[in-house]
Image (cartoon, rainbow, N blue to C red):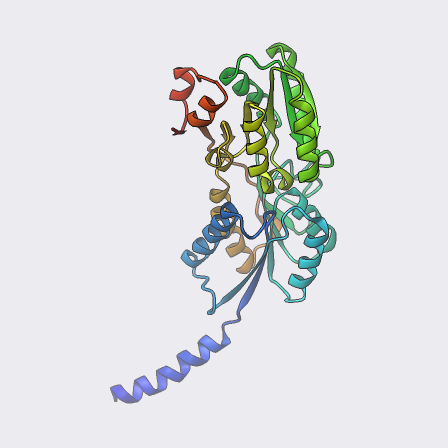
Length: 323
């Protein structure tokens, strides 16, 4: 009888497994595929999905593309992904999200690591996003850029000119710049916009800016600066420019200081939103979320290399000190 029961149960279980439809997730990253930070972020999302019961080769298929900061390439890989009929898309950075939003009207889109989602036109309401987008944004206030300026002055008091590196067509970065600009006179610094769209412009802007003394830079978060972070860090070191970055992995790549959040945590949270979409939720059911925990990282080796001696009180505030 036991053998007979097992014989009946096995085909029933097999048929149930066959009936479970494989769901499809498309991910577009604003980094090149070789970027270690990008791989860590995608890996974090995959791991969280497994914890939520979604396993590749069983009930989900994850298609990841790395178009980086190339708008034409983003469009090309998006066409490819949409031909696979994904149930949900995950977009990373403002540039990628803007392209995806313009082309995709029905498929739910979870954005991760974007600035000012309302000002960028991704949603009109954080609490109940309209349309087919929701997700996880960078900072809920452009005032963060003023704090970056204060922090740069604290670590490098001699700075009198600050180049704020922004992508000029990104509304969030324009807001960050204007917020810092309003604070600049109180800190006795002149703020200069360093508009960049690619590596060549980064080289030109930094070379020209470094021609005058007592300069420092603040690097705004964008796909262009993320994908060219090693170039920016190397040029800042070459020109002995104190630099503040928006994310810790710039500092781990040799940069001076950073104040921001951990993008990996947003990808972990993003898995939860993907899970809820796959189980029937709509984007308007899922409010846009912002970071609640921030990290301050300082690289003392980088400071020494450009002749800086950060005050002990500042070092004591760091969440991570690289020596």
